[in-house]
Length: 252
Image (tube, rainbow, N blue to C red; front, side, top):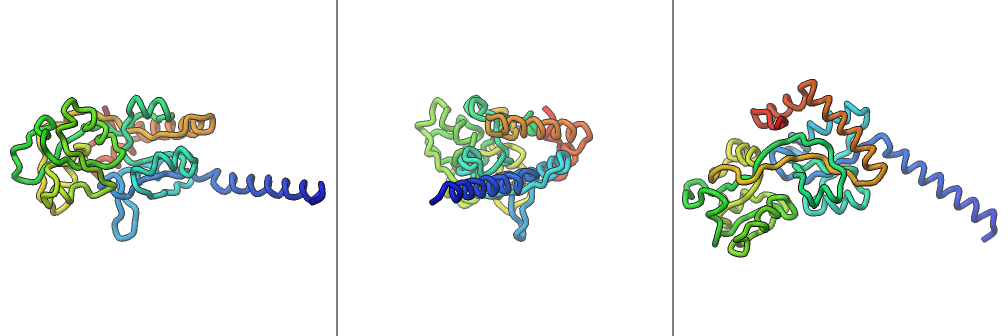
């Protein structure tokens, strides 16, 4: 290969790289599971939910298209790390471990971790009653971490799922599951499953959007953060929350 050919290939590669960068420069790629009702779920082949509405509102605010990328919840962090998505909108709880790795926006959901059991199971009244029980939880979620950090975690049979944890509890295959209180309340209200809340929330959680902690990621985070602040100020976040939950979970 001659020097002129090498130069030609190099220039072609640069041009293609520039084209690829431009192709998604005005698109915010948002990862979500599509399986965590009512935050993100699929109905009649359409992606819906609180997170979907929030991110579409963010896109309008910053003047960018939103491209939703669905995958199992446990795989979303790896997709963010590798640059296949720009952020995750799937009720991502702020934790010290995640803060050390990602650049987070301000919180836009305030909630609590909740134990849920099959209807009529009054033997479980809260997290302290989970000893010796089989408990379902979403793989890689903050709720799995909360369970494993309990001082009696070795006495709990923790079963991890990618989605639909409520099904096994309703069918009696697990004694309880853990999710946020507002989602649990909506699942009980909207789905024909025999479930009930067990006690009060046992841990306060705040949800935000994580971005890669590099120059480009932090710059994008700042733009989205400004959009969230405006959406909070003009009442859009409240409207979206009341649409899906009947109450405002976007205020501390």
